[in-house]
Length: 253
Image (cartoon, rainbow, N blue to C red; front, top):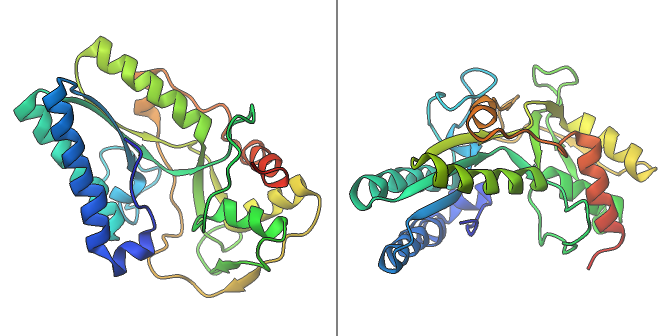
């Protein structure tokens, strides 16, 4: 179940939109699944359920304290899945994505994201001239270069985790909740530098002040996914990920 509104900022100004689509929509889906006798559910959750990290890397035992309404909707759905497991016999896999990005390395999906709010597609839009420039929010954090550090995970690695999760639900007959991240952090300025190496030219950007709600660092522990699913990312090294994006942004569908 991938479908959801996902802009954290918008969720804080229009929570009803997010409640009706993300939470209510999922409950309706679960209801129809029960009626049809289908009770295995793979859910696209998010690291947003954790809020600002209390420690790094963030593992599944980390306190759950979402700091935006989008993150709350993901947590609310996870809690509902637990109730549907208890009351209705569902089995589920809640997969907490960190920063998902990238394109299919085989080029089978080439559509561009509409009005992106995430760093990597914004960088690509600036690289091909779809936008004049973009902002880097804060360079005074306690990180090596002062910009925020994030954990990026390639969509192909996520897709593999979904297949493995379904196999787990079939073989183990129980639910699971796991983080999916690369366990490697890249700063905003580092990602820009790597992107410039990939595209072969400077990418216009400007430095702005900090943005409210941005933690300095966010890094996953994916040890549980490795242990339970025998999963490991193969395409999530930053430059590899950026190359799959650049290929598409040069020649979109």
